[in-house]
Image: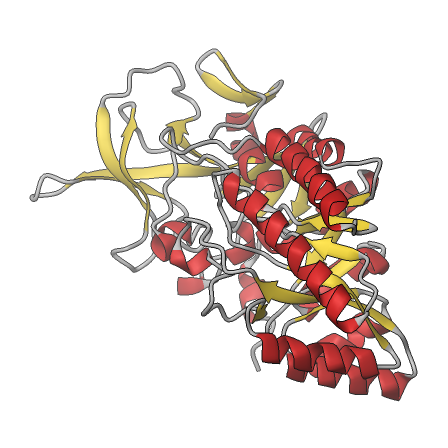
Length: 428
């Protein structure tokens, strides 16, 4: 899906008034280009629609999608919380001045030093399993420090998404099943007997890139009923439910576009309705969008290299990036669309694979792309690359990681391009 404020002037792609070919020439390619205005629009979409007069609503940005200090500043500006999944995430947030008490710390195998850092900085910790809870109890006892937690559970919902990003099935590596009564019993006994670790409520995340409303509503229903069951059985006060994220975006024309405004408002309505029915409303509810905030707000710009027509009648357009800056096509068979930014109104008459420069036959960003006649030096623009591109970038083949630009009134670098010396900085 193209950025909201993309437009064409004299055959050249612009984001609002900013010429993207000029941006590519100034900052070099490959280059991630985010529209800051669209980023902020997406944040406001969730904070506006996921709101209620009956309970506190919190939008938590899922930082694994994309994280740089400049984004942290925008999250603070718009009142979003943020989740983290590693000590690195926590440290970036901390050094960015993000309020650490508004960090929700996830992970199925949190290391002791990660938990200690999270406890020291008053993060909310989402506990994954019983042994982790026991370790957290020991840490808090040794520090004589209280900590707020949620516990991750699996409601057993099939979210109709890629198996690698389904996260709430009965065999998921994340959390514990709400149907595993003996395990839940042991977990609750640990909480009841803990002096320092407080359970605020339960967390779930049913998957990523979900394009339908129904799984979100089913999750609301299951999580509220499960929470009320635990409250009644253990006489334990719960005040929170975290419904996770998974709000999908369209990447190609055939993708169904999830109505995020409707999804958020319907979730609020159902929380209120079920809460009134069962006699328990949480004090605080959370959702965790990531991709749906950053995904469509970014394009990646590449410089076209040579065009190759093979003996087997296959066309390739080479670019100066590839799987090192966008691993998703190789990892998930993810699909993208593209244009040539300096030939926006030209006839599209060439079918080719957009091939990266890595030494891998699977380094294809787009299969069977339809583009105008290309020339070396053209600027190829791939849409909807804001999520899980920069955050999953690698140095395979010792290729340098690209820089990141935010466009506000003018372009600004928010993450510098790596240098050759950066490749050597950790070697002895």
